[in-house]
Length: 233
Image (cartoon, rainbow, N blue to C red; front, side, top):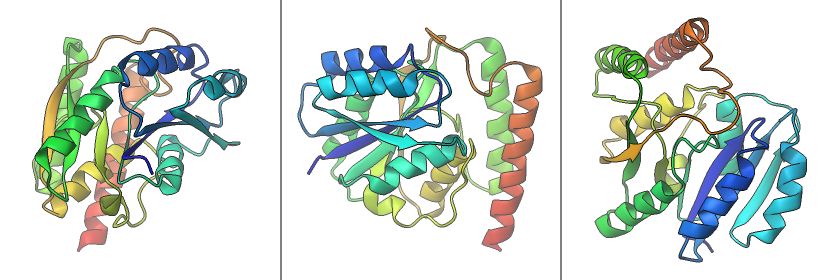
């Protein structure tokens, strides 16, 4: 059994998939880590690229989802089939270095506690993106009644036993908020570590395409926050 399964949801990431696999090949100096690439209903050649490349990498596997049902759905599908002691996810856009997965796993191992949530803290972002993150963080912290900062930072790693406690997690980008909040709610120690966050190398974000998309993201996150807080009463 692997010690860690890291889920990477891929939606139209045909150009980034070879880069992800190549980078993991260079930095993965251990045999107890599984990389689970989730083809999250891609409409480009991601499926064909995965089918061709993944068999060449002993640490990688594929999970196919025929129809895209959301960012969170792809991640949750991968987490549910993972068998490892530790599980988690990161993005496929190469804005988070795959080596950060190894750094996060080493934090889990060094700490030794049964329950620990390890999450990146983004550095090197544009002023506009930092301002957006600050506004969302301040709102969520006050509204949810606990400190929540840089909610969408990657990677996210934690014990499988923590995931087994989740009830009705969201299928969209609110999954990052849900997981982070659940850790705080259950009084699980959250360890943040700095990760460099450069621009995408290939492709385009499926949601961050301008002010209009940011507003839609804010509305969806706020709606989920209201629903989550209501369910806790």
